[in-house]
Image (cartoon, rainbow, N blue to C red):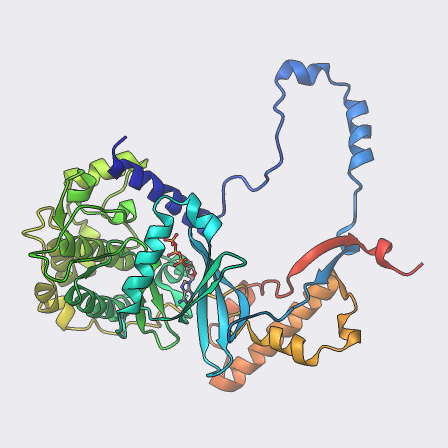
Length: 445
Ligand SMILES: Nc1ncnc2c1ncn2[C@@H]1O[C@H](COP(=O)(O)OP(=O)(O)OP(=O)(O)O)[C@@H](O)[C@H]1O
C-alpha cells in the first residue's frame, strides 16, 4: 500500500470518528454478542431461559430510577480554571477554560503522549502545529496563546482563543444542512481573508472544511486545526508540496490521483470551493460509496454543477466552477476569487441566519467554568452530601429551567420568537449523571 493510501485510510478513520461523534456510532454497546441459529433456538427450553433472565435482570419502574448529580471539582492547569469538554478530535479532548488572571474565556486542547504515539505522525504533526500557530496572528486564524506541559502526567495543553461553535455543527443543525446565501457569503469572505494571510506567510492549510472553521460569538470565522498544514521554506522557489493528508471529500484531483508533487496553494483553493459548495447547497460535488470510489470520482473530475445551483445563484455557480477546475493551472487564484462578482456583491439578507445550536442543552452556551468555581468557593459540607434525583425531579427541574429561559427571552425581545420551536424543542438534561441506583436501596432504613 502506498503512503498516500495509508494517509487516506488514517484520515478515513478520523472522519469516521468525526461522523460517529456527529451521528452516533452504529454499535453503541461493547458487550460481546453470541449469535444463535434457528437450530440453537429450537433446542432452547424457553421457560427455563425466561426464568434465568429474571434471575439476572430485575425489572425496575422508571420512577424508581434515581440519578446522582455529578460533583463539580475545580481543577486548575497553570493559571487556567478547567470547565467542561467542548469537543473531541482524533488527537484529544478540547475543554473550556477560564484565564484566572484576565478572566477571559479560552479553549484548551489536551494531548497525551500515550495517545500521540498511537497516531501515525502524531507527535510530529502536533510539533508542527504548535510551531506554525506560534508564528501566526490574524483575525481569521485561531490564535495559540499558551502551551503548558505536565511531565509527570505526560500531558500537553494548548491554550487557544475560545470559539463558541463551528460551521459543521451549525450545518448539521440547519433544516436543509445549508446556510442562507448571505450567511455563507459572510463566512466565505472571512475564509478568504484568513487564507490570503496564511498563503502570504507561506503556510498551506491542506484541510480546509466546515469542521475546521470555528466561529466566535460575534461570528468571526477562525481557521483552525493545523495538524496537517505545511510551511514552505523561507526561500522556496514555489509552493510545491509532496504530502496531502486532508479529509478525502475535500481533496483535489491531483492528490486523489496520487500525483507525487503538486501546487500547495491550489489545494486550499479547491477545498475552499468544496466548502463553499457544501455550505450553500448542503451537498458535496463528489460522492462515493466508499473512500476509493470517492477518490476515483474526484480523480476523474467529471463534474457538472446541478441545475439547482444555477437556480440558487448564477454568479455563485461560476465562482464554484472556477474554484473546482480539475487543472490547478486553470483553477482560480485568490485575487480572481476576490474580484469575482459573487464575492464583491453581498447577497441580500433573506430571513434569519442559522443560529448556533445549543451545546449540551444550553442555547446560550454559557460558561461551563462557573459551576466549578461556585462549587469550589461556596460548597458547604451539606452541599457535599450525596444528592439524588428521581426522573420526575429531573423533568420538573428541566421544565422550570425552560420556563425561566422562555420568560427571560420574552422580556428581552418583547415576545417569544418562533413560538412553535419552544414546544418542539425539548430541553435536554442539564444534570450530568454518574450513577444510576435503585431508590429503595438509597433510602435510610
Ligand atoms: N478554540 C476552540 N474553541 C472552542 N471549541 C473548540 C476549539 N477548538 C476545538 N474546539 C472543539 O473541539 C473539537 C475538536 O477539535 P480538534 O481541533 O481537536 O479536532 P477536530 O478538528 O474536530 O478533529 P481532528 O483533529 O480529528 O481533525 C472541535 O470539533 C470543536 O468542536
